[in-house]
Length: 438
Ligand code: XUL
Ligand code: CO
Image (cartoon, rainbow, N blue to C red; front, side):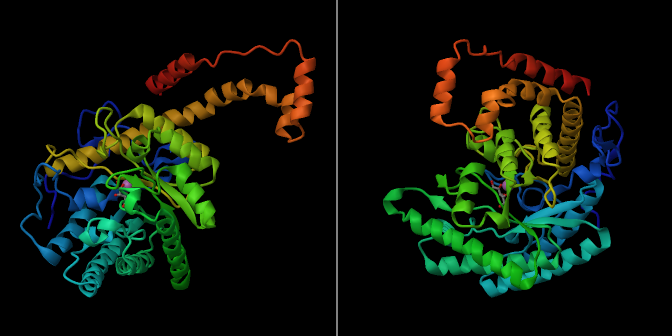
């Protein structure tokens, strides 16, 4: 059965096309910076936004109209699997990502949840074999069920901690079975609301213990996925421990876990933390921790995580600039952790939204590749820091300078070299020129 009858397979028609159901920039076969676009982008569908969610918000119920709305329980879960693979096929999306609760009903016990997951994972495995679609990552949802009100790996309740471990264990087994290339930890409730009732030290130690147990179990079962932590500063919890890239890296280093993890960075999480997305990517890249992307965007005027499909070419360009400078994302990919707006309730909107996101990233890639080819920023930056390539600057960089040697240099150097302009406005205008020309 077809769940999206009104939409046929989407193909590339070029940027003069007026067909809404066509790619204008995403051409999987086009070679950019030595690789095809299909190789650059392991585009992934987020199961939770596209199949499971229905447009509800704190003020209103679901609005989405879907061909599986009349179903319930396992029948509903099975229909969603079929719909997911139809959508991925029509959109030429090679990958998908899911939480355990997205794909199967929890039932009334952990045993029942495991059994439901087994039933649905059988079906997903079958579909993967038939279509060649791949699992970018899976994860355990340890934030929706009321049992996680105090957190999961950072809860005050040891029995809840054990339940979280049981979910992660199953998640790793599912990832192994489906050949998942990554496994994600996002700690939506791993944080605190008030320090008046919180043992922060114990909570963070327990979080690190949970990560270590996950590493050990993955090794035990031979699951070789890249482990990823997805930072987010707040929402749903007021203060989340994986606040941003820098905080997460410091946490991993403190507990000796950094060798086992990279980061899954999300654009709207970056802006919630008061950073740009490319700041977060740069911090991760500098530390060899850039793992994968959750592609979306927030709204300039709204203070929460709106998870909109990415359409901002400026941001996509700077994002792909970091990705290219990183030599790609390795096992990672570009997962659309994005949802259609509540009023975009028709099934067709799911396609139009993904096309918008894929085209935006494709355009961003092309501009970023050209900027790097022309060394626009590199040459400027090289020149800006050129004083560190010779003389006293070279000594500083080589670690040979001391406060005394620098003071002596400063005392003897009556005419220090002049500062030069940072040329910020010119650089931004040049970036605009590349975006408009490419
Ligand atoms: C929440 C979020 C999650 C993670 C996976 O903001 O981004 O969906 O991507 O748990
Ligand atoms: Co995300």
